[in-house]
Image (tube, rainbow, N blue to C red; front, top):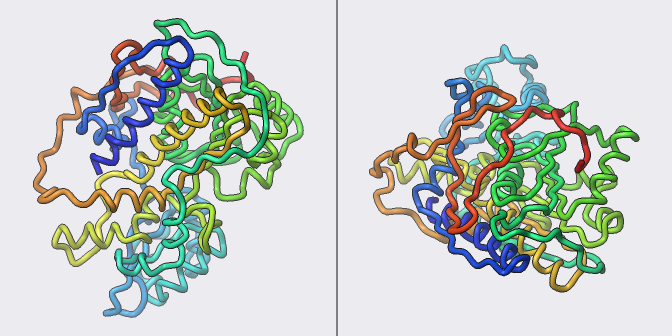
Length: 426
């Protein structure tokens, strides 16, 4: 995992320096320490001295199906509508009072395949535990394997967009505008990474949708505005902001943004020369292409929880110690964004960058396991944390791991609550 963290972050940082070099001729060195990168991927933070509880009480792994069959499922219930949808499906009372014990008892009556499929049909997030061998036989695995780790496709013709002049002392992405529509981890961390390298990142949240506590950490370096894209006035403001953007980064469920009229082709028509960046759980093709998913669910479906439990000598599956699929995918999204920006500058065109958690999982698996990894000592976090006043309270979080020789990476804005800023570049 540390290798995936280091490598994915290093390519994002190196691509940023290539943009800087193209703008002002400055060449600089980049260093990414293995441990620093791994600790950034833990996402550790506190607010006013308290570490938020990032998981809903009924989220996690459960035995499923008749006793002795050895089936497991993971449920993701951090959002109330996902929690209540699952509870309705399995015949339990909706709301926060239902217990893990009740959920476990109800799931004993469900075959894992049936629960996974019926949950997916309802837009819920449930994954059946598979081993690597079983995942390797799955048609979605074959579909994902056919895709590049980072897919960069030209989707339209356009002249190269003008970039502001860049002073030698300025960070490489300064003046480049990123309009961000994301909510969970991979997308927000991608935007945060671009902000650390100087990009002007404007995060847009719907006032009707919930967020997770990690938004306090992942919003470092960004402005933050509200917009309901079903509302005509907000759509007009968003379209106006899009006209001044170099990048649209989105991480919503497959087809969700396109259904609102802001899919890649539509955006390229509105803003010729833009770089559209999309994150998915299971890739753009295959039987699961439209399926919702999060890092924890993809770990379960693709064999990692089974392998981690076996490596620990446990009779039960185990989650990986960090959400590395999210974090490595985030850095790959940042890299793809920068690579597409360079292509746009050199040859024009509008571009679409795509990354999926499941494809990142295949890459992670190809890197192999660390021998005796469970014996590794816990690294020192204290020396790698930084504090700032934020719109959420006093934030102490892991600092960015990439080191630039001339223009240090840093967050030039403190994180603010959604809706603090106007939906505009002014």
